[in-house]
Image 1: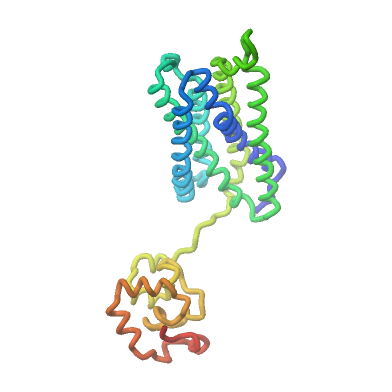
Image 2: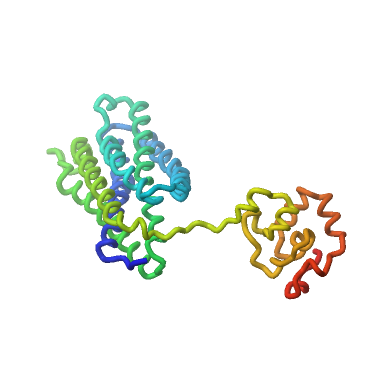
Length: 312
């Protein structure tokens, strides 16, 4: 694997701008906008953001699992990164520019905020989860991973703080009564959403395209599996094929008992079986009772593992 260049680290890190912009709005301004400018009660606005946050906690797991098992010519991560760019931009702009007809109707405004907040978090996660997972596939070096993640954190904070400064310095216009009324400037918040959406779109596409050429070199982190054991989970088959009961039927034994061939030796010999043996006792109580009382043949164990083979 070729070492990462400075430009590749830059393009990888710049993708975090999208998360930074989203996080800036959700953490500081979205509640103020819907409460002050649009008139949604504090309780309902807070509940909508809470629902979106709970949803995000579960959907992130699903996106990660889907990405891990995705197989395309563009790898496992890039298709989701590319697919998220346009939805992120459109949904984020819509979140900060609700239809004017919703103002004054709290139930409809609450439903709109809840739906759009959930969708924005989902779209951002489509980019964020696969992009973070790329770290382990781009390099095996601890120092390089630290370097590119520090670049990512820098751009994430830079994007969010830049939008916060821009909003207060140029987009929110106070009225004659005082600066406090700037938080009632619905149009200024709308421009904030539009500019943020454009920045997020550019950041996601630039990041994905900037490291696109690395796709053939990405490390495969597939777990080793013994498919023979997965097909037949009966106790004799597992014993004959040398599968470890304690670690589940899909892993092969890596202990001194690997050479033990008899059923009681494999199932009952190593004290490392632990809870695995208890599970097999519940499934086949009669068979295991007979096996545990049967004498073990010394020929069942190779010379180097006989001292460790025996009954529990």
